[in-house]
Image 1 (cartoon, one colour):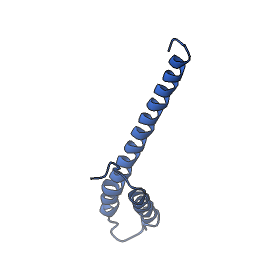
Image 2 (image 1 turned 180 degrees about the vertical axis):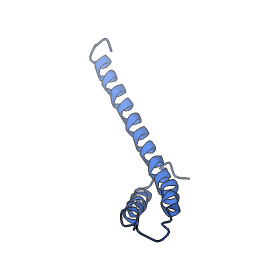
Image 3 (image 1 turned 135 degrees about the vertical axis):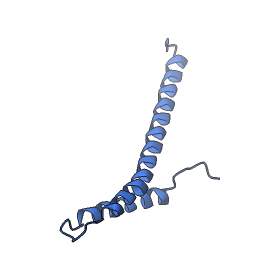
Image 4 (image 1 turned 180 degrees about the horizontal axis):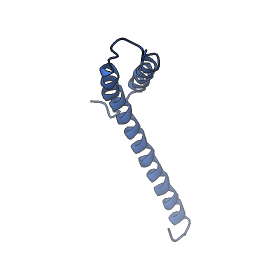
Length: 84
């Protein structure tokens, strides 16, 4: 299995699916004889969940990168005789 949980293709798919769900909700006629909101709840549970997972993954990646950048700065500071 790949080290990358979300490929760029998967990220694009998640974003497009969520965007489509939002457009469907925006274009939904509230004046329908018997409006059925289940389709939006289903989309929220599916596409919303996928987008939430992607967001958490990206935030964690940023956090790991920032920690790595901070560690590099500390290493540079110590290499130059700093107290870090």
